[in-house]
Amino acid sequence: MNKRPFAVTVVSLLMMAAGTMGIVRGFHYANKVWPPEQDLIWIVIVDGIGIACGVFMLRGNNWARWLAVAWVGAHALIISFLNRREILVHVVIFALLAYLLLFRSDVRGYFRGAAQDG
Image (cartoon, rainbow, N blue to C red; front, side, top):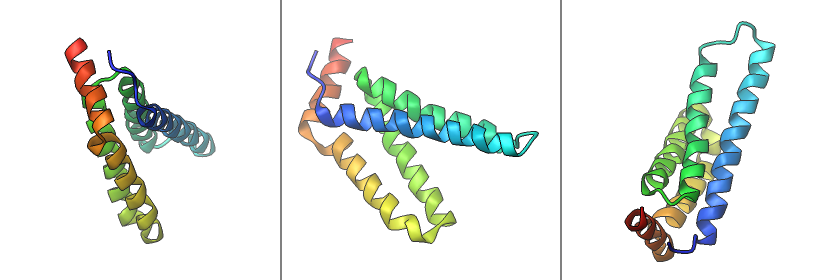
């Protein structure tokens, strides 16, 4: 098995942290509004996907890196409709993540090697 690139470790940990913080924030908000709205279900599902992406990228699953890019891209798209001032920040984060997970040769080799090993 190939050695995991540092970029994959960092992005995976950030994905897990972002998903966890989103779920915690969702439940914190739900405590203030009882009964919780249907949005809480979507918060748990969407942020759970982020956590799963982080976990499975650490394990070398190629589908997880593509899902992570889609997850961040969808988030950036949704934010662009809700808060015009944050568009640039989210586009930069999305571009950085896409570069780290899709275009670096060591990362591509890691995911390709993990797929061949398993």
